[in-house]
Length: 323
Length: 293
Image 1 (cartoon, each protein chain N blue to C red):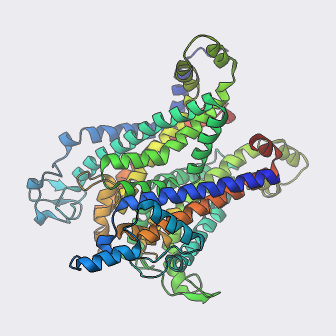
Image 2 (image 1 turned 90 degrees about the horizontal axis):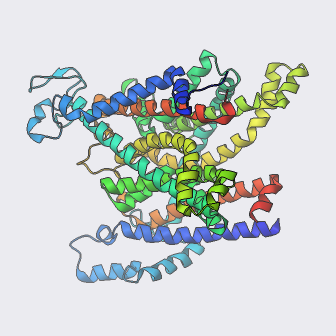
Image 3 (image 1 turned 60 degrees about the horizontal axis):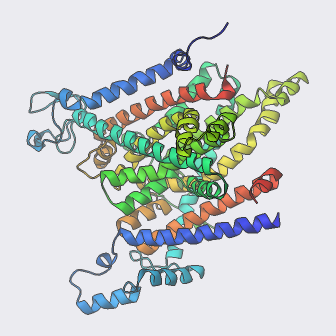
């Protein structure tokens, strides 16, 4: 087990290293940030001095190793646009994305799983068919368009909810959160619904597929034969059978929702990480781009590692097969 | 009773039983037809600048324009008939979805089946890479690649393929790996046929059903992904106005209540994707051995 653990962690570290090289080279190819940094009428001397200050005159590999050395110490450089350390910039944007993502994924699960279980329990009923149609719709409708419709319906037409921004925030543990104020919550409703829609459809499908298969198992047959009520069978046995894949997907989806938030945050001007990356790509803010992409890569690699390791802990066959 | 119908005939027989799927297929066919015939049936060539006047700009649906015909879905900021623009946009969106889907299918299926055939370390390494890629959200990957490559039709196709081929590779590998050790493959390999022929003529056809299912899903998601990227400004150039770009162009006017510029192209997009998914859903249910009747 220890050997497997070490092997997997080494593998993950190698992947992170490869990703950092890829990201660095890729971002380098997007464009030269010099033209953004220096005003066109600056003198040759100022130009040369600025280029030297950021190290743009060095060869790419040297810039990469300087970056790598600093990154290992947690220093991702200064943002060109915001003129503050990238690490702090990203940390300041993280809570907004985190609370939005959490609200969306939780909402989608709490609503989607019961509906999906019902659709799997009574696949032929009218209600189940409607739920399934709803889930196909959730997959079919592009996120950004739903966002537009939500803004048009609830913000422009009805005027019930704000169209964008984060609203008032209140501090908790030294971080500003929107969900603690009524105004912030109001601002959160539309983007959270927008972000949740796809996950909602996914949870319905997973729960339905799992339930349909679970209903045919001996567990359910025996539970019924023992005289348990259908309610108990569903809540005690079926839910337990389908819980493992649901939890796995919940974890993975939480990660991918962070990425999906790019679209939602852009539409609703939600000042989170997703908006930050879009803005940094359009303004060629290289340090922010590199740091964000590295953070996302690291995040997904850690999630995958955790999933792999927990599977290995649960299922000895996986260990044998791969190690 | 022995079922004498060929597998294909049986497949279509079962397919016909689902009214939703037949409806989806009809809608997809209709939309492809409309898109193909767009230059013949639209009242206006939306990209012939000479036929546009600013006097007609941003008119609501049903407005009769200076050219004398009714703009059933209104006009956009340049005075373009929206219905015509949507049909032209449909052409580009469908084209992007099919091209990206087809390239992704060919590339992914080749990678997946070849890995399954070769086995050993190569297989382990390639599939590990693919798994790693699959753990990243496709939209983020496509977004970054599209931003790196810049605007352009082929750049966008490359971004879509890069984001999607892994799904095909994973599926093809799974199916091919299951076939690899069956007797008929061993038998084919024991003849002096070249390995390439065994992979493509014997293994691949048997790995095809799950690939077809993935293909329908991926074509729909390619269309949606293209629209999203174009909406975010890293997709197609303005010379290729897909549905996503029409929606993006209308976004600023939405806040002042001119909903039609964004909403109607979106409706067209959704009908298209929804219909493709209805068909794909039925095919999946039919090909799923665990739900076989």
